[in-house]
Image 1 (cartoon, rainbow, N blue to C red):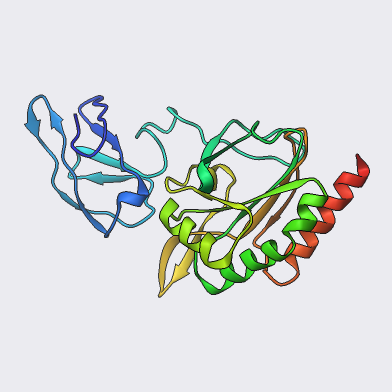
Image 2 (image 1 turned 45 degrees about the vertical axis):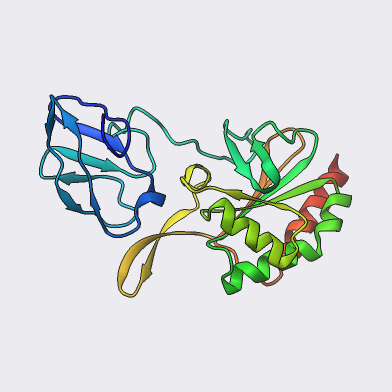
Length: 232
């Protein structure tokens, strides 16, 4: 077995899955035992890379469970279609899935990172309007790639009345198509595009906002929730 993750040898190439959260730097020692021989060497791997060949015998795959792209297809969300199957962990020990809140409208808002200025403002605005969302029949969840400890601290600091989903492996982020290329300090990196999704009581995606700006956004989402409730 691979010392980092389970290994799946095929056609002379060893492949394994390395979670992006495990990439603490741009260089990672990776190794695998194939036929009883250690064949992994130090490799330079850019953050967010989906596939990198390492000395011709390895491939690192970020965000998919196999080097073979046909092994797992990412879920895709489409307006006016039911959400694909998923399950995620949130603060408070809550599990959120495509079926966990049937009978309620659900607002999923994706944001880049806890404790950053824009994300703090957005969270506070959802907090301040939360009672109105509940009154209109909607539950709110924030989603980011931060871990549960970060979420717990962020939630406590801002006194958020709603739960935060820890998508540390980026499964939801990729599934909802919010992982985008960004330019930082002249380099291309993977970032989260601030986005919100409104799911109906039947589990169908009713509306989406992508690449949004924080000012006025929460009011717009609340207006859509109220309109959806009125439409029955």
